[in-house]
Image 1 (cartoon, rainbow, N blue to C red):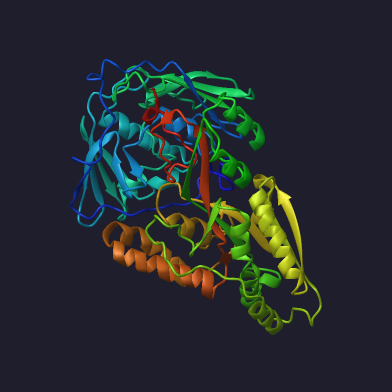
Image 2 (cartoon, helix red, strand yellow):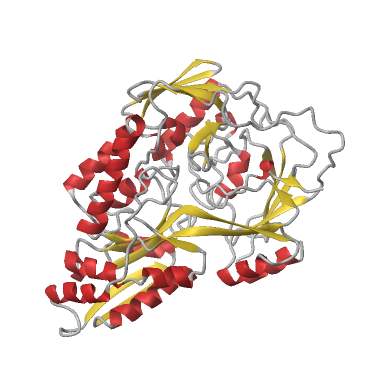
Length: 535
Protein backbone atom coordinates (compact mmCIF):
# COMPACT_ATOMS: atom_id res chain seq x y z
CA UNK A 1 0.00 0.00 0.00
CA UNK A 2 1.11 3.57 -0.51
CA UNK A 3 2.62 3.63 2.92
CA UNK A 4 3.87 7.11 3.73
CA UNK A 5 3.40 8.43 0.37
CA UNK A 6 -0.16 7.54 -0.25
CA UNK A 7 -1.10 4.15 1.19
CA UNK A 8 1.17 5.45 3.72
CA UNK A 9 -0.05 8.76 2.57
CA UNK A 10 -3.66 8.40 1.71
CA UNK A 11 -4.89 11.12 -0.59
CA UNK A 12 -1.84 13.05 -1.82
CA UNK A 13 -3.04 14.78 -4.99
CA UNK A 14 -1.25 15.31 -8.31
CA UNK A 15 2.42 15.57 -7.52
CA UNK A 16 4.66 15.73 -10.55
CA UNK A 17 5.59 13.19 -13.20
CA UNK A 18 7.43 9.93 -13.54
CA UNK A 19 8.91 7.89 -16.34
CA UNK A 20 10.33 4.46 -16.98
CA UNK A 21 12.40 2.16 -19.11
CA UNK A 22 10.92 2.13 -22.60
CA UNK A 23 10.88 -0.16 -25.54
CA UNK A 24 13.44 0.78 -28.17
CA UNK A 25 12.28 3.01 -30.98
CA UNK A 26 10.45 1.28 -33.79
CA UNK A 27 10.04 -2.05 -32.01
CA UNK A 28 6.79 -3.94 -31.79
CA UNK A 29 6.04 -5.03 -28.25
CA UNK A 30 3.50 -7.46 -26.89
CA UNK A 31 2.93 -9.61 -29.95
CA UNK A 32 3.74 -13.20 -29.14
CA UNK A 33 4.79 -12.16 -25.64
CA UNK A 34 3.96 -13.67 -22.28
CA UNK A 35 0.97 -15.98 -21.87
CA UNK A 36 -2.36 -14.23 -21.67
CA UNK A 37 -5.30 -15.05 -19.39
CA UNK A 38 -6.85 -18.24 -20.64
CA UNK A 39 -10.07 -17.93 -22.57
CA UNK A 40 -13.06 -19.94 -21.51
CA UNK A 41 -13.45 -23.37 -22.95
CA UNK A 42 -11.06 -26.28 -23.02
CA UNK A 43 -11.04 -26.69 -19.22
CA UNK A 44 -10.37 -30.26 -18.11
CA UNK A 45 -13.58 -32.01 -17.16
CA UNK A 46 -12.02 -33.21 -13.91
CA UNK A 47 -11.48 -29.67 -12.59
CA UNK A 48 -13.39 -29.11 -9.38
CA UNK A 49 -15.40 -25.93 -8.86
CA UNK A 50 -13.95 -23.52 -6.29
CA UNK A 51 -16.73 -22.26 -4.05
CA UNK A 52 -14.41 -20.75 -1.45
CA UNK A 53 -14.11 -17.03 -0.76
CA UNK A 54 -10.52 -15.80 -0.81
CA UNK A 55 -10.11 -13.59 2.28
CA UNK A 56 -7.44 -10.87 2.19
CA UNK A 57 -6.46 -9.18 5.46
CA UNK A 58 -5.46 -5.52 5.08
CA UNK A 59 -4.58 -3.47 8.17
CA UNK A 60 -6.17 -0.23 6.94
CA UNK A 61 -9.48 0.82 5.41
CA UNK A 62 -9.71 -0.67 1.94
CA UNK A 63 -11.29 2.15 -0.10
CA UNK A 64 -10.76 5.88 0.25
CA UNK A 65 -11.69 6.88 -3.32
CA UNK A 66 -13.77 4.92 -5.84
CA UNK A 67 -13.01 7.16 -8.83
CA UNK A 68 -10.46 5.38 -11.04
CA UNK A 69 -9.24 8.75 -12.31
CA UNK A 70 -8.26 10.13 -8.90
CA UNK A 71 -7.75 7.04 -6.72
CA UNK A 72 -4.32 7.28 -5.11
CA UNK A 73 -4.43 5.26 -1.92
CA UNK A 74 -5.21 1.95 -0.24
CA UNK A 75 -7.86 0.91 -2.76
CA UNK A 76 -5.18 -0.18 -5.23
CA UNK A 77 -5.49 -3.63 -3.62
CA UNK A 78 -9.11 -3.89 -4.77
CA UNK A 79 -9.30 -1.67 -7.85
CA UNK A 80 -6.44 -3.52 -9.53
CA UNK A 81 -8.82 -6.48 -9.77
CA UNK A 82 -11.76 -4.39 -11.03
CA UNK A 83 -9.89 -2.32 -13.63
CA UNK A 84 -7.15 -2.98 -16.14
CA UNK A 85 -4.71 -0.80 -18.05
CA UNK A 86 -3.37 -1.09 -21.56
CA UNK A 87 -0.34 -2.92 -20.16
CA UNK A 88 0.82 -4.56 -16.93
CA UNK A 89 4.39 -4.63 -15.68
CA UNK A 90 6.09 -8.00 -15.20
CA UNK A 91 8.67 -7.64 -12.44
CA UNK A 92 10.39 -10.89 -13.45
CA UNK A 93 11.00 -9.94 -17.10
CA UNK A 94 11.21 -6.22 -16.18
CA UNK A 95 8.99 -5.31 -19.10
CA UNK A 96 5.44 -4.22 -19.72
CA UNK A 97 3.15 -7.00 -20.92
CA UNK A 98 -0.07 -6.95 -22.93
CA UNK A 99 -3.33 -6.38 -21.09
CA UNK A 100 -6.05 -4.41 -22.86
CA UNK A 101 -3.47 -3.69 -25.54
CA UNK A 102 -2.13 -6.75 -27.35
CA UNK A 103 0.87 -5.02 -28.95
CA UNK A 104 2.34 -1.58 -29.44
CA UNK A 105 4.97 0.32 -31.40
CA UNK A 106 6.97 3.44 -30.71
CA UNK A 107 8.61 5.79 -33.18
CA UNK A 108 12.39 6.16 -33.26
CA UNK A 109 12.20 9.46 -31.37
CA UNK A 110 9.90 8.00 -28.69
CA UNK A 111 7.19 10.61 -29.32
CA UNK A 112 4.57 8.54 -31.15
CA UNK A 113 3.08 5.40 -29.65
CA UNK A 114 0.48 3.16 -31.26
CA UNK A 115 -1.41 0.53 -29.26
CA UNK A 116 -3.49 -2.28 -30.78
CA UNK A 117 -6.41 -3.09 -28.48
CA UNK A 118 -7.82 -6.46 -27.55
CA UNK A 119 -11.11 -7.19 -29.30
CA UNK A 120 -14.31 -8.51 -27.72
CA UNK A 121 -13.72 -6.87 -24.33
CA UNK A 122 -16.74 -5.61 -22.40
CA UNK A 123 -16.97 -3.19 -19.50
CA UNK A 124 -18.91 -4.34 -16.47
CA UNK A 125 -21.62 -1.93 -17.64
CA UNK A 126 -22.05 -4.01 -20.80
CA UNK A 127 -20.54 -1.36 -23.07
CA UNK A 128 -17.78 -2.29 -25.51
CA UNK A 129 -14.19 -1.40 -24.70
CA UNK A 130 -12.74 0.07 -27.89
CA UNK A 131 -10.24 2.78 -28.82
CA UNK A 132 -12.76 5.59 -28.42
CA UNK A 133 -13.76 4.37 -24.96
CA UNK A 134 -10.12 4.03 -23.89
CA UNK A 135 -9.37 7.51 -25.23
CA UNK A 136 -12.25 9.00 -23.25
CA UNK A 137 -11.11 7.28 -20.05
CA UNK A 138 -7.54 8.54 -20.27
CA UNK A 139 -8.66 12.04 -21.27
CA UNK A 140 -11.06 12.19 -18.32
CA UNK A 141 -8.26 11.11 -15.98
CA UNK A 142 -6.00 13.83 -17.39
CA UNK A 143 -8.75 16.46 -17.07
CA UNK A 144 -9.49 15.53 -13.45
CA UNK A 145 -5.88 16.37 -12.51
CA UNK A 146 -6.10 14.27 -9.37
CA UNK A 147 -4.15 11.42 -7.87
CA UNK A 148 -1.43 10.26 -10.25
CA UNK A 149 -2.91 11.88 -13.39
CA UNK A 150 0.45 13.59 -13.89
CA UNK A 151 1.80 10.34 -15.35
CA UNK A 152 0.12 11.39 -18.61
CA UNK A 153 1.89 14.78 -18.69
CA UNK A 154 3.97 13.81 -21.76
CA UNK A 155 0.78 13.32 -23.81
CA UNK A 156 -0.05 16.01 -26.35
CA UNK A 157 -3.02 14.28 -28.01
CA UNK A 158 -4.73 10.91 -28.24
CA UNK A 159 -6.44 9.66 -31.39
CA UNK A 160 -8.73 6.68 -31.87
CA UNK A 161 -7.50 5.75 -35.34
CA UNK A 162 -10.07 2.98 -35.56
CA UNK A 163 -11.93 0.80 -33.07
CA UNK A 164 -8.82 -1.26 -32.36
CA UNK A 165 -6.06 1.35 -32.65
CA UNK A 166 -5.08 4.03 -30.15
CA UNK A 167 -2.35 6.51 -31.07
CA UNK A 168 -0.55 8.87 -28.67
CA UNK A 169 1.44 11.90 -29.75
CA UNK A 170 3.80 13.06 -27.01
CA UNK A 171 5.25 16.46 -26.22
CA UNK A 172 8.51 14.80 -25.31
CA UNK A 173 9.84 11.25 -25.47
CA UNK A 174 8.62 8.99 -22.68
CA UNK A 175 8.20 5.23 -22.13
CA UNK A 176 4.45 5.09 -22.58
CA UNK A 177 4.27 1.31 -22.30
CA UNK A 178 5.45 1.56 -18.70
CA UNK A 179 3.34 4.61 -17.96
CA UNK A 180 0.30 2.64 -19.16
CA UNK A 181 1.16 -0.08 -16.65
CA UNK A 182 0.89 2.27 -13.65
CA UNK A 183 -0.95 1.09 -10.56
CA UNK A 184 -2.64 4.50 -10.43
CA UNK A 185 -4.36 6.67 -13.08
CA UNK A 186 -3.80 4.23 -15.96
CA UNK A 187 -7.02 2.24 -15.68
CA UNK A 188 -9.43 2.08 -18.60
CA UNK A 189 -13.06 2.47 -17.55
CA UNK A 190 -16.48 3.26 -18.99
CA UNK A 191 -16.68 7.06 -18.71
CA UNK A 192 -20.43 6.98 -19.38
CA UNK A 193 -20.90 4.83 -16.26
CA UNK A 194 -19.25 7.35 -13.90
CA UNK A 195 -21.89 8.84 -11.59
CA UNK A 196 -22.29 12.43 -10.43
CA UNK A 197 -19.98 11.83 -7.46
CA UNK A 198 -17.22 10.56 -9.73
CA UNK A 199 -17.71 6.97 -8.66
CA UNK A 200 -17.41 4.18 -11.18
CA UNK A 201 -17.05 0.44 -10.98
CA UNK A 202 -17.36 -0.20 -14.71
CA UNK A 203 -13.95 -1.56 -15.50
CA UNK A 204 -12.93 -4.52 -17.64
CA UNK A 205 -11.30 -6.58 -14.91
CA UNK A 206 -12.22 -10.07 -13.72
CA UNK A 207 -14.12 -8.89 -10.62
CA UNK A 208 -16.94 -6.52 -9.79
CA UNK A 209 -18.22 -5.21 -6.46
CA UNK A 210 -20.49 -7.49 -4.50
CA UNK A 211 -20.83 -5.34 -1.36
CA UNK A 212 -19.13 -2.38 0.30
CA UNK A 213 -19.70 -1.45 3.93
CA UNK A 214 -17.35 1.33 4.95
CA UNK A 215 -16.15 0.95 8.51
CA UNK A 216 -17.16 -2.69 8.82
CA UNK A 217 -14.61 -5.41 9.50
CA UNK A 218 -15.44 -7.11 6.21
CA UNK A 219 -15.45 -3.85 4.31
CA UNK A 220 -15.52 -5.04 0.71
CA UNK A 221 -16.46 -8.20 -1.17
CA UNK A 222 -15.93 -8.87 -4.87
CA UNK A 223 -17.51 -11.36 -7.23
CA UNK A 224 -16.52 -12.72 -10.61
CA UNK A 225 -17.46 -10.78 -13.72
CA UNK A 226 -18.85 -13.64 -15.76
CA UNK A 227 -18.30 -11.74 -19.01
CA UNK A 228 -14.57 -11.33 -18.43
CA UNK A 229 -12.61 -11.54 -21.68
CA UNK A 230 -10.13 -14.00 -20.18
CA UNK A 231 -12.81 -16.54 -19.31
CA UNK A 232 -12.98 -18.60 -16.14
CA UNK A 233 -11.77 -22.01 -14.98
CA UNK A 234 -13.58 -23.91 -12.21
CA UNK A 235 -10.65 -23.86 -9.78
CA UNK A 236 -10.25 -20.06 -9.82
CA UNK A 237 -11.55 -17.91 -6.95
CA UNK A 238 -14.82 -16.25 -7.93
CA UNK A 239 -15.41 -14.62 -4.56
CA UNK A 240 -13.08 -12.31 -2.63
CA UNK A 241 -13.45 -10.55 0.74
CA UNK A 242 -11.30 -7.87 2.38
CA UNK A 243 -11.36 -8.24 6.17
CA UNK A 244 -9.77 -5.23 7.86
CA UNK A 245 -7.59 -6.39 10.76
CA UNK A 246 -5.29 -3.69 12.18
CA UNK A 247 -3.40 -5.98 14.59
CA UNK A 248 -0.77 -8.24 13.03
CA UNK A 249 -1.12 -10.84 15.79
CA UNK A 250 -4.87 -11.08 15.19
CA UNK A 251 -4.32 -11.50 11.44
CA UNK A 252 -1.84 -14.30 12.14
CA UNK A 253 -4.32 -16.09 14.43
CA UNK A 254 -7.03 -15.84 11.77
CA UNK A 255 -4.70 -17.35 9.19
CA UNK A 256 -3.80 -20.23 11.48
CA UNK A 257 -7.49 -20.94 12.07
CA UNK A 258 -8.17 -20.97 8.33
CA UNK A 259 -10.50 -17.95 8.50
CA UNK A 260 -8.37 -15.86 6.14
CA UNK A 261 -6.11 -16.70 3.19
CA UNK A 262 -3.59 -13.87 2.89
CA UNK A 263 -1.77 -11.64 5.38
CA UNK A 264 0.13 -8.88 3.63
CA UNK A 265 2.82 -8.56 6.30
CA UNK A 266 3.92 -10.21 9.52
CA UNK A 267 6.61 -8.99 11.88
CA UNK A 268 9.92 -10.93 11.67
CA UNK A 269 9.11 -13.13 14.66
CA UNK A 270 5.70 -14.18 13.36
CA UNK A 271 7.07 -14.63 9.85
CA UNK A 272 9.69 -17.03 11.17
CA UNK A 273 6.95 -18.93 13.00
CA UNK A 274 4.81 -19.01 9.85
CA UNK A 275 7.62 -20.66 7.89
CA UNK A 276 7.25 -23.80 10.00
CA UNK A 277 3.48 -23.80 10.54
CA UNK A 278 1.34 -26.51 8.95
CA UNK A 279 -1.33 -25.20 6.61
CA UNK A 280 0.60 -21.98 5.92
CA UNK A 281 2.95 -21.00 3.09
CA UNK A 282 5.20 -17.94 3.06
CA UNK A 283 6.74 -15.80 0.35
CA UNK A 284 9.54 -13.27 0.58
CA UNK A 285 10.67 -10.79 -2.07
CA UNK A 286 12.29 -7.35 -2.36
CA UNK A 287 10.01 -4.39 -2.97
CA UNK A 288 10.43 -1.09 -4.81
CA UNK A 289 9.79 0.75 -1.52
CA UNK A 290 12.67 2.31 0.35
CA UNK A 291 13.07 4.44 3.44
CA UNK A 292 14.26 8.02 2.99
CA UNK A 293 15.83 10.10 5.75
CA UNK A 294 15.54 13.62 4.36
CA UNK A 295 17.66 16.44 5.74
CA UNK A 296 16.55 20.10 5.70
CA UNK A 297 18.99 21.68 3.24
CA UNK A 298 17.34 25.12 3.45
CA UNK A 299 17.29 26.10 7.13
CA UNK A 300 18.64 25.40 10.61
CA UNK A 301 21.80 23.49 11.56
CA UNK A 302 21.31 20.97 8.75
CA UNK A 303 21.71 23.76 6.21
CA UNK A 304 25.42 23.06 6.62
CA UNK A 305 26.35 20.12 4.34
CA UNK A 306 28.96 18.95 6.87
CA UNK A 307 26.22 18.45 9.44
CA UNK A 308 24.16 16.51 6.89
CA UNK A 309 27.13 14.33 6.00
CA UNK A 310 27.75 13.65 9.68
CA UNK A 311 24.13 12.60 10.14
CA UNK A 312 24.44 10.21 7.20
CA UNK A 313 27.48 8.63 8.83
CA UNK A 314 25.79 8.38 12.24
CA UNK A 315 23.10 5.95 11.06
CA UNK A 316 23.79 2.34 12.01
CA UNK A 317 22.75 0.85 8.67
CA UNK A 318 23.98 -2.67 9.34
CA UNK A 319 22.54 -2.75 12.85
CA UNK A 320 19.17 -1.52 11.59
CA UNK A 321 18.91 -4.11 8.82
CA UNK A 322 20.03 -6.86 11.21
CA UNK A 323 17.42 -5.83 13.77
CA UNK A 324 14.71 -5.94 11.09
CA UNK A 325 15.49 -9.67 10.76
CA UNK A 326 14.96 -10.17 7.07
CA UNK A 327 12.14 -7.68 6.51
CA UNK A 328 14.53 -5.21 4.87
CA UNK A 329 17.74 -5.23 2.86
CA UNK A 330 20.45 -2.61 2.79
CA UNK A 331 19.94 0.02 0.10
CA UNK A 332 22.47 0.98 -2.56
CA UNK A 333 21.54 4.49 -3.59
CA UNK A 334 18.05 5.79 -4.18
CA UNK A 335 16.95 3.28 -6.81
CA UNK A 336 15.95 -0.24 -5.68
CA UNK A 337 17.27 -3.26 -7.53
CA UNK A 338 15.01 -4.22 -10.43
CA UNK A 339 14.60 -0.68 -11.76
CA UNK A 340 16.63 1.12 -14.41
CA UNK A 341 19.09 3.32 -12.52
CA UNK A 342 19.92 0.93 -9.68
CA UNK A 343 23.61 1.46 -8.87
CA UNK A 344 25.52 -1.22 -6.96
CA UNK A 345 28.39 -0.13 -4.74
CA UNK A 346 26.59 2.77 -3.05
CA UNK A 347 25.74 0.92 0.16
CA UNK A 348 26.14 3.34 3.11
CA UNK A 349 28.20 2.60 6.24
CA UNK A 350 28.25 4.02 9.73
CA UNK A 351 31.43 5.93 10.63
CA UNK A 352 31.09 7.80 13.94
CA UNK A 353 34.73 8.92 13.97
CA UNK A 354 34.37 10.67 10.62
CA UNK A 355 30.98 12.05 11.70
CA UNK A 356 32.65 13.60 14.74
CA UNK A 357 35.34 15.20 12.57
CA UNK A 358 32.73 16.76 10.29
CA UNK A 359 30.69 18.05 13.23
CA UNK A 360 33.81 19.62 14.74
CA UNK A 361 34.48 21.44 11.46
CA UNK A 362 30.89 22.74 11.63
CA UNK A 363 31.27 23.85 15.27
CA UNK A 364 29.42 20.96 16.92
CA UNK A 365 30.28 17.71 18.64
CA UNK A 366 31.51 16.52 22.06
CA UNK A 367 33.81 19.52 22.68
CA UNK A 368 31.18 22.08 21.66
CA UNK A 369 27.74 23.15 22.93
CA UNK A 370 25.01 20.54 22.60
CA UNK A 371 23.15 20.47 19.29
CA UNK A 372 19.43 19.74 19.27
CA UNK A 373 17.73 18.49 16.10
CA UNK A 374 14.06 17.78 15.40
CA UNK A 375 12.86 14.71 13.51
CA UNK A 376 9.42 13.50 12.44
CA UNK A 377 8.47 9.95 11.50
CA UNK A 378 5.40 7.81 10.93
CA UNK A 379 3.18 7.12 13.87
CA UNK A 380 2.68 3.40 14.42
CA UNK A 381 5.58 2.31 12.21
CA UNK A 382 7.83 0.06 14.30
CA UNK A 383 10.56 -0.04 11.65
CA UNK A 384 10.90 3.74 11.55
CA UNK A 385 10.76 3.82 15.35
CA UNK A 386 13.70 1.41 15.45
CA UNK A 387 15.67 3.69 13.10
CA UNK A 388 14.97 6.65 15.39
CA UNK A 389 16.01 4.70 18.50
CA UNK A 390 19.33 3.64 16.98
CA UNK A 391 20.03 7.08 15.55
CA UNK A 392 19.22 8.83 18.84
CA UNK A 393 21.69 6.58 20.65
CA UNK A 394 24.45 7.20 18.12
CA UNK A 395 23.92 10.96 18.10
CA UNK A 396 24.09 11.10 21.91
CA UNK A 397 27.73 10.02 21.56
CA UNK A 398 28.25 13.06 19.33
CA UNK A 399 26.60 15.51 21.76
CA UNK A 400 23.46 15.76 19.65
CA UNK A 401 19.97 15.41 21.12
CA UNK A 402 17.32 14.17 18.72
CA UNK A 403 13.81 15.39 19.44
CA UNK A 404 11.77 12.79 17.54
CA UNK A 405 8.02 13.07 17.04
CA UNK A 406 5.83 10.27 15.70
CA UNK A 407 3.03 11.77 13.59
CA UNK A 408 0.28 10.77 11.20
CA UNK A 409 1.36 11.26 7.60
CA UNK A 410 -1.08 14.15 7.08
CA UNK A 411 0.36 16.01 10.07
CA UNK A 412 3.94 15.14 9.15
CA UNK A 413 3.43 16.28 5.58
CA UNK A 414 1.78 19.55 6.65
CA UNK A 415 4.70 20.31 8.95
CA UNK A 416 7.15 19.31 6.25
CA UNK A 417 5.66 21.78 3.78
CA UNK A 418 6.37 24.49 6.38
CA UNK A 419 9.99 23.33 6.75
CA UNK A 420 9.12 22.57 10.35
CA UNK A 421 11.78 19.92 11.06
CA UNK A 422 15.47 19.22 10.59
CA UNK A 423 14.99 15.58 9.57
CA UNK A 424 11.94 13.91 7.99
CA UNK A 425 11.59 10.15 7.60
CA UNK A 426 9.25 8.69 4.98
CA UNK A 427 8.90 5.84 2.51
CA UNK A 428 8.86 6.19 -1.24
CA UNK A 429 7.98 3.96 -4.15
CA UNK A 430 7.06 4.76 -7.75
CA UNK A 431 3.57 4.86 -9.22
CA UNK A 432 4.85 2.91 -12.16
CA UNK A 433 8.10 0.95 -12.40
CA UNK A 434 10.61 3.69 -13.05
CA UNK A 435 13.21 5.50 -10.93
CA UNK A 436 12.27 8.94 -12.25
CA UNK A 437 9.72 9.22 -9.47
CA UNK A 438 12.33 9.62 -6.73
CA UNK A 439 14.16 12.38 -8.56
CA UNK A 440 11.31 14.44 -9.96
CA UNK A 441 8.96 14.26 -6.98
CA UNK A 442 11.41 14.27 -4.09
CA UNK A 443 14.52 16.14 -5.27
CA UNK A 444 13.62 18.53 -8.07
CA UNK A 445 13.31 22.16 -7.01
CA UNK A 446 9.83 23.48 -6.25
CA UNK A 447 8.68 26.98 -5.39
CA UNK A 448 6.60 25.65 -2.53
CA UNK A 449 7.52 22.33 -0.91
CA UNK A 450 5.27 19.42 -1.79
CA UNK A 451 7.12 16.13 -1.58
CA UNK A 452 10.51 17.79 -2.03
CA UNK A 453 10.93 17.67 1.74
CA UNK A 454 14.69 18.13 1.80
CA UNK A 455 13.99 21.51 0.11
CA UNK A 456 16.90 20.90 -2.23
CA UNK A 457 17.32 23.60 -4.89
CA UNK A 458 20.05 22.96 -7.40
CA UNK A 459 19.81 24.07 -11.03
CA UNK A 460 22.31 21.48 -12.29
CA UNK A 461 20.43 18.65 -10.59
CA UNK A 462 17.13 19.96 -11.97
CA UNK A 463 18.52 20.04 -15.51
CA UNK A 464 19.81 16.48 -15.19
CA UNK A 465 16.44 15.28 -13.86
CA UNK A 466 14.63 16.92 -16.77
CA UNK A 467 16.70 14.91 -19.26
CA UNK A 468 15.72 11.56 -17.79
CA UNK A 469 12.39 10.94 -19.63
CA UNK A 470 13.85 11.29 -23.11
CA UNK A 471 16.96 9.29 -22.21
CA UNK A 472 14.86 6.52 -20.72
CA UNK A 473 12.71 6.33 -23.85
CA UNK A 474 15.56 6.49 -26.36
CA UNK A 475 18.89 5.50 -24.74
CA UNK A 476 18.72 3.26 -21.68
CA UNK A 477 22.50 3.18 -21.26
CA UNK A 478 22.68 6.96 -21.09
CA UNK A 479 19.70 7.02 -18.75
CA UNK A 480 21.44 4.55 -16.43
CA UNK A 481 24.51 6.79 -16.38
CA UNK A 482 22.30 9.79 -15.66
CA UNK A 483 20.68 8.06 -12.70
CA UNK A 484 24.07 7.03 -11.31
CA UNK A 485 25.46 10.56 -11.54
CA UNK A 486 22.35 12.06 -9.97
CA UNK A 487 22.49 9.69 -7.03
CA UNK A 488 26.10 10.63 -6.36
CA UNK A 489 25.25 14.32 -6.49
CA UNK A 490 22.17 14.06 -4.26
CA UNK A 491 23.49 11.58 -1.70
CA UNK A 492 27.24 12.17 -1.63
CA UNK A 493 27.77 15.79 -2.72
CA UNK A 494 24.57 17.44 -1.46
CA UNK A 495 23.96 14.96 1.39
CA UNK A 496 20.24 15.71 1.07
CA UNK A 497 19.17 12.22 2.05
CA UNK A 498 20.21 8.94 3.62
CA UNK A 499 18.69 5.71 2.33
CA UNK A 500 18.96 2.99 5.00
CA UNK A 501 17.05 0.12 3.45
CA UNK A 502 14.64 -1.27 0.90
CA UNK A 503 11.66 -3.03 2.41
CA UNK A 504 11.21 -6.75 1.77
CA UNK A 505 7.73 -8.16 1.45
CA UNK A 506 7.10 -11.07 3.81
CA UNK A 507 3.70 -12.62 3.12
CA UNK A 508 1.81 -15.52 4.62
CA UNK A 509 -0.89 -17.45 2.74
CA UNK A 510 -3.03 -20.50 3.15
CA UNK A 511 -1.12 -23.55 1.98
CA UNK A 512 -3.86 -24.56 -0.47
CA UNK A 513 -3.54 -21.38 -2.57
CA UNK A 514 -1.67 -21.79 -5.86
CA UNK A 515 -0.32 -19.23 -8.31
CA UNK A 516 0.58 -16.31 -6.04
CA UNK A 517 3.44 -14.11 -7.33
CA UNK A 518 4.46 -10.87 -5.62
CA UNK A 519 4.80 -7.95 -8.02
CA UNK A 520 6.53 -4.94 -6.40
CA UNK A 521 5.18 -2.64 -9.11
CA UNK A 522 1.73 -3.11 -7.51
CA UNK A 523 2.47 -3.05 -3.78
CA UNK A 524 0.29 -5.35 -1.67
CA UNK A 525 -1.94 -6.19 -4.65
CA UNK A 526 -3.09 -9.78 -5.00
CA UNK A 527 -4.26 -10.53 -8.54
CA UNK A 528 -6.95 -12.99 -7.47
CA UNK A 529 -7.69 -14.13 -11.02
CA UNK A 530 -4.23 -15.73 -11.15
CA UNK A 531 -4.91 -17.89 -8.09
CA UNK A 532 -6.42 -21.35 -7.87
CA UNK A 533 -7.44 -23.62 -5.03
CA UNK A 534 -5.33 -26.75 -4.76
CA UNK A 535 -7.37 -29.91 -5.17
